[in-house]
Length: 128
Image 1: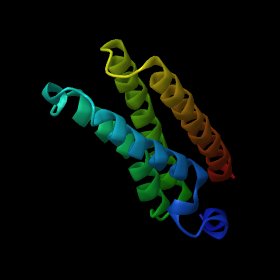
Image 2 (image 1 turned 45 degrees about the vertical axis):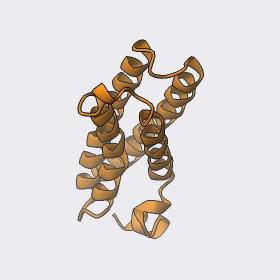
Image 3 (image 1 turned 135 degrees about the horizontal axis):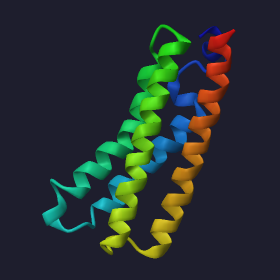
Image 4 (image 1 turned 90 degrees about the vertical axis):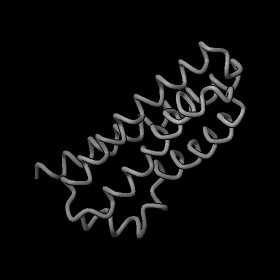
């Protein structure tokens, strides 16, 4: 993990964490407008899956090995997939405008690409 620690002193410096955190804040903002009946349903699930992405990145960053970090990045990637579904569901239920849906979807796809790139580069280093 030395190379990661040397490059980033805290998880908050990691670009994919920054973007995932920004998007989580945005999800919290847009879900404020969801119907009250969704408070314990879609609103809660969408917020949890979204916040799980940067939370897993942060937790993995504080683990003792690159191998463990990769595992937490896989967890973050799983939460990314879940978040994409909640985004789609919110759109299909007309809780989001097309513009908001398109913007969030594009931004989350960027997070997915960053996660995949980081996982792939770390897996290569773990195999060495």
